[in-house]
Amino acid sequence: MEDKMLTLEKFEEASEVVKKVTLETKLIYSDYLSNQTGNKVYLKPENMQFTGAYKLRGAYYKSSTLSEEERSRGVITASAGNHAQGVAYAAKCYGMKATIVMPTTTPLIKVNRTKSFGAEVVLFGDVYDEACAKAYELAEEHGYTFIHPFDDLAVATGQGTIAMEIVKELPLVDYILVPIGGGGLITGVSTLAKMLNPKIKVIGVEPEGAACMKASLENDKVTTLTGVNTIADGTAVKTPGSIIFPYVKENVDDIITVSDEELIVSFLDMVENHKMVVENSGLLTVAALKHLDVKDKKIVSILSGGNMDVITMSSVVQQGLIFRDRIFTVSVLLPDKPGMLSKVSSVIAEQNGNVIKLEHNQFVSTNRNAAVELRITLEAFGTEHKQKILDALEKEKFLPKLVRTNL
Image 1: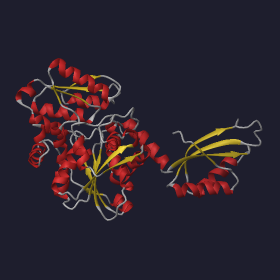
Image 2: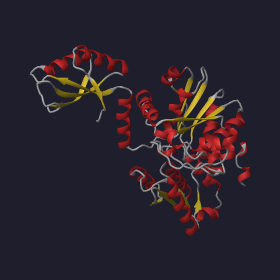
Image 3: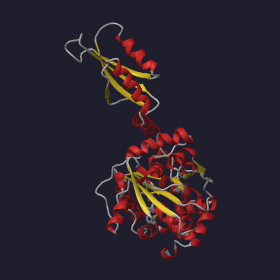
Image 4: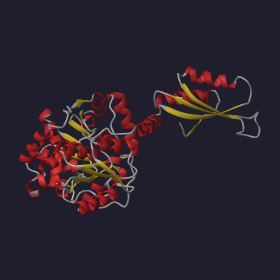
């Protein structure tokens, strides 16, 4: 049956099936990203999906293909988040018992949300790979039906329904950018996109610290990374799928990798310009836009999910402000005499800088008359404004030195 899976008929069937549980995620034209890149950039906001990610598509379609006997045994999967919620919700729809194995490091919000759909959660291992091994063990022991997060052609067919929607809405799309973790989403999207129009370029995007598909394509075989290190936890996969690998090889035009720093800045762009919360893995395709050396093309970036806990969100915002020079810390040395603090303040005020934190250290030197150190954390409009403030302090002989910002 697997061989007959990725066909146009199956994609059409899956598109009809997933409509029962998905919300319509219409393309959003981005003025901001279009102006920045010289292309027409559209966002496919799967972060607005009912479970907060596209994963419901594959899980629900896979569940629809199971026999009564397979459903009656109950289903099991391993996931650090989005696939877990997709399977749990699909199981609820089909009245199946669901067991989800999640790494012990999974944020509580994701565990609770998965439980809220009626699934039983087993916490095991530090990373996805360990949780997955445990899920296979439990499947063997209890006879559960295993639903793989990405290395399954029915799951990939369900995820590919995104391409059907993109092409229907934007028939002349030139590029589709797709995040890659294990490769299920890009398998479905690239295979269907090429069937509908071979001219569409499909570009995969991976985090620099977890580029398992790029390594596999370079080696021409499925390759396991020795380790992964990225803030994009949804795509932190060591080994891509082996069943789906041939489809990726055939249908994906290129793979771009992006750094964690670029993801942090993209988070800020999404929140400020589109009022949308997108998780780090979903931002890969936004960060990749400036790596594409093309102009005047119609490009769709798939925002794969929006499940991010608030603590991560706040630290990403802070980091983003620092990277964008919207917040910075400067150290100045002042003679220890009255009135110096107000003099520094007035220099900053004249340049419209906003002070958000002050630290005064009288013991920076044994000769306090020579100098005390003042560390000022400031808010600015960006790099140019920051430089103006520094130049003004320099001009008044305050010898400003940039230091690391700790908020």
